[in-house]
Image (cartoon, rainbow, N blue to C red; front, side, top):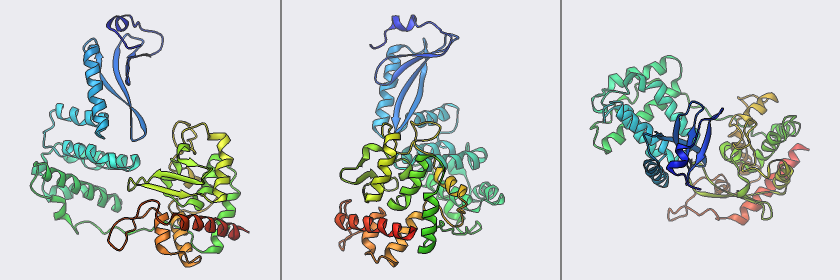
Length: 392
């Protein structure tokens, strides 16, 4: 039943904090000291989140519902109410409407719905750690190239050359957003092109020599950790998807009868189909009794309501003494791409389709997700059989 003023007034403090629920995500949290806070629970990009909507009696029930409805509207427009509130609070804290920090937070809230959560958090972390403390409150239109360079030099001087380049790139996007919204006239980061030490391009480690691939697969088969991690390790080379896509796989996306896994690609936000080989189906069926009632195929060790940690597979490989210079989570993709092309002689466009890379037809149009599906099914089974032959 929805809340009423009488129910709210009669919500007395208890030994522990508790909640009384209204509707559509709105509830009142009552503390042991008698404080009453309005909260709104919502899901954003698949993640459960909460945002505070004020305290009672300063915020009455009707006003709380108005704030909830506004937050629901933001979610429907792919705007995170929590991030939106932070940007608003920054403005209320007398930050200039044209300050670098406020413009950056606004840019982030607009762009982040198209990013993975890890990517969004990484960008926020870099800006908060390496930029905001030194020039966050400066009007963005007044920031000069030497001033920005001095800020980024701090990152460079601690030896984080690649991070320094990323910070500069992020600042460039913020400045271009400021220009587009009429709060700056010059792309200052562009003036720093060539000013930083060059970043050394590092390729993600991958095993591509067939004999060593066989040794690697035998080591994975002998892994003594949890069944969840062992199955993820065994499935990774068979499906060669991005690590984030594997660890966040959901049971609702997998059809074992049709031997298919369909999901939205995290990088391009497009639909993708992974045909499952007989070996892949067997691994998933082995795990199904343990996690089949959960949302995620590979739930986390600390909370089964969340997916496996992004470091779980890497940590497992390190415990098996597979060095980071030899194999990475992304390495299974490079391994498959190289061997499918050079050893099994599969057509490159078929491989690219299965890697979820954009492949275009002669007229420049991107093929849809079902393109070459029969050939991809055959390729995935041939690949699984080939890996079995390497192990033996």
